[in-house]
Structures are given as structure tokens and as C-alpha cells.
Image (tube, rainbow, N blue to C red; front, side, top):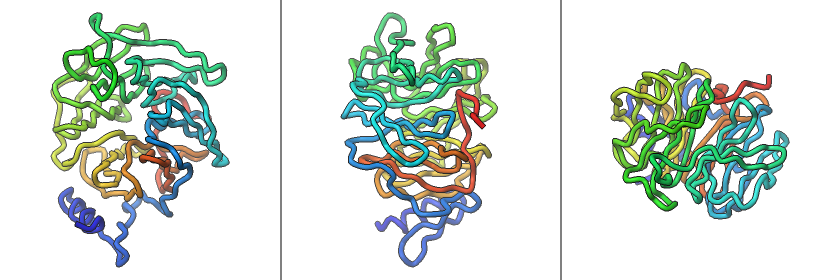
Length: 307
């Protein structure tokens, strides 16, 4: 099936009209974007993942097979930030300015000093067993860290794939292990809801947060029909879910309704807002990182804005 037709069908299924023009290109999501072409800003990698934005709006991302973390400055220059990362995947800056990373190859959650590159281990086990392969994370206002632990790589010592919470004091608790292959993870703006995007089925689940690290029964979003990877959020609370099989970003309203799709040239793995005004959506996708100019501003997690 041609891709433009697929997008039109997905838009109808989700309850919103998503039209393609005569050249088989999807229209922008109304009021959201993109407002320009989705362009590659860095290429030549093996598999890009884990984009994170710092206080200035610069983007950091991982090239997992090459064991590197790269940075894209505000002037668009891409450079190597760190070598020998041991399979680092998901990234996010904490309020102290440290880069928190899911070190999948070593089955650890670590903190990286952006100046000295010193690495501090934050968590490496639960109930005396090593994690499987920490994948993606989100940091709450208390400084606690939710992260997913599928068995994509790593030693796989946990009996089930799960989502964990690391308290600021270092204590680790299991949040949920009810579904296989937890991948992307995010919080709502008020931090009353935890979102988990699964690579298996069901694909997208929202959980009410009872207390930091504790959740209630989840709700499966039936309009997300494909396995996903990473996700991000704008300041309106809209969610951006990467859909690798569709080569698209599935955009949802805060109440979970489909708003539309954003086409990506390669299969997307993750995304984050960045740039000086936080109005550029950066998308990691296979061999490249793409940038899409947007109407909306991105929401920052785990850190205060520099502006």
C-alpha cells in the first residue's frame, strides 16, 4: 500500500481527517506542524536513538552500535560528545545538568557530567538481579527516574521485562511488568499520569500515578495500533509517538485522540523538542537525525528552562 494512503487511513481510524496532497505527501497536523520540510541535520550513523535537550536547546543523541553520544549545537554542527558508551540508549538531563543515560550494554542507569564526562552509576539491579537492558527514561520533579527495561540486549537476568523507578535516594522499585517489551516512557505535564509505549502489544498504555513510583490500573489506547518506540510532548500536552513501521510520528491530544501523523523519511526511533525556542522537533531515525520546524513549543522534563 502506498504510504500516503496508509496515513489517510490511519487518520480516519484515529478520528481525524488526515489528507495527502497530489504528490502523496501528508498535510501538516493543524495548529501543530510541521511548518516546513522535515530535513536531515546529521547523517552517517548506524542506529540513532535517545535524543535529549539541554538547557540551551542543544540536542544530544546516541548511536548505539557505534557506542557514541553525539551533540548538535545551536548552529547545527554535530560533534562526538562521548565515546565508549557501552550501548547507551535513552538520555535526559536532570535538574543538576547531568546527562542521565540508559546504558543498555552494561544493564545500568548512569549519570554523566557534561563537562568532565565522569560517569556515576545510579542503579544496576533489582532484588539482587541485574537489569536486562535499560532503554528509555523520564525524570520527575522530585528528581526520581522512571525507566524501561526490556530484554533487547544485555544479560537479561530479570525474570520479566519491566518499568522501574529510582528514587532520589537511590532506592529502586518495580512500577509494572504486566506487558512485554516496554520501550518509551513519559509523564503527563502535571505528572499524574505515566505513559508507556510498548514494542509488543498492547502498544500504548497510560497509568494513573498514585505516588512517585506507584501506579494504578492502566488504560490501553485502542487508536495506537502499531508497536512504538520513543515519545515526547509539547507544551499543550500533546503526545508524539514514534511509529517505526509507519515511518511516522503519531500525534495525540492530551486526552489520547489522534490529531494526525508526521511523515519521516526513515523509520523513527525517538524524538524530542529542541532549539533556542524549543520549536524544532528532532527525530532520531536509523542512519540520521531529522529536524521539523513546528508551530508548538516542546515541554521540558527533569530540568528548568534556561530562558
